[in-house]
Image (cartoon, rainbow, N blue to C red; front, side):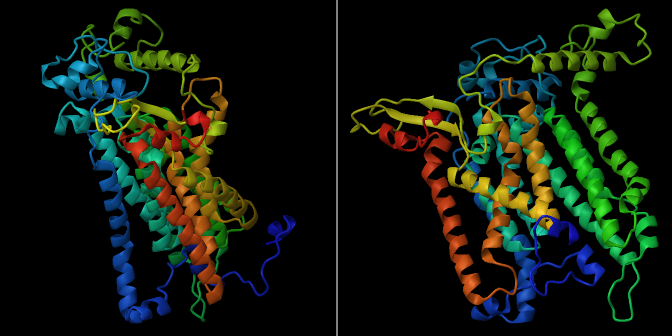
Length: 560
């Protein structure tokens, strides 16, 4: 509290911290509102049961809505849009032979016309991203065929599942089923997330595994704190008391959810190298949570206790596991022949590195290291201009979205009414729902305030995850980068907005007038965001609309 007063914060009169350490370590979930349930004729005992049902029924319902939005006419447009020209074909080759192939130019039309008649190229292809995302996309192609629906299926599925995951993560963060479901609903109606879920690109896959890691660490945090609370002594009044010895020496034991986070981060790293940066952010976050838990339990030197007891187990659960998963993701390439008929650079060590001082290292590992070195050189040297490149400073305000697909059907063709006097427009624009993102800018400021001045761990977690997806790009502003990379941090932007809306609703114990006004303000904001999503739906899904309708949706000149 002294720290907060140093920032000018004065606690409300009569405000007290919970005296029961268990409550501070493991805050309870919000209780059902007796008044609300009574109005619909449900008693207190039944309300508790309904809350348990809604804890899963609510997220599942939101995920169902998200799934309908993502799978509706998924094969439309029947075209190879934007970078699908790389990843759809790489994915097909990967599931067929274990590594990417070098495809002929202008093969896309042949694939769309007759995918079964297109042979798999014999030559290996040089690629600049690891294989996990292509294995994921290829799984959909393996199940449903080498066509737009097949190569978009898995991203649509992961996009839907990520909405379900965010509902549950938000519920655990905020201890509120409503706010958790609200965060998931906001993700379901975000335009960028929708477009990426309906396109065979790697970034949605990366987002999914990063979110899985975040959720796993949040669960791990709860489990660890519950374990600490169970080990602390209970006073005669029934309250759990802090104990410095227990707090500093207790071994926290087997932590499967942190191990699962390591696996998810390895899969994220194996999708795009961005996952390695997220690993660093999340690694620091989880050990700081351990120190905070020990401090709450009574440790006099929580950081020293964390360094002795938790830091090395945290490292082993995340870093070696993630690297092992990353290397394992190359198994198809590793098992391919090293005689020039396998993956790209698979034979490099056999040809060029037979007598080096590193010859004791397996050839496949030396070849892989060389491959990754060449890929790194490519990435750091990628500065060529692109029509839709953008600077990360502009991402949160939607400065420069990316057009994945655009056509101008003539009147009477491809859904353009014959009565139109001019051509129509048909576009898939990777653009976040504007009102959601612009609200998110204020929500981010609110989250930072909660973190700095109220030491709210939930705000810190959201800021850390959002920062892991956004901040590293400021170091690469000279490179060719795009707005759609932002899909990795969209879930945390939605959590920030949900947290701010929770503040609008008012804390427990507020007056009826305060709660009513907050509910009206929150309801209006949510409805406006949903309306905004519906308004932009045609340019998220490639529907043919009159040119003036398309122009009306270009709110900023930089969106064209």
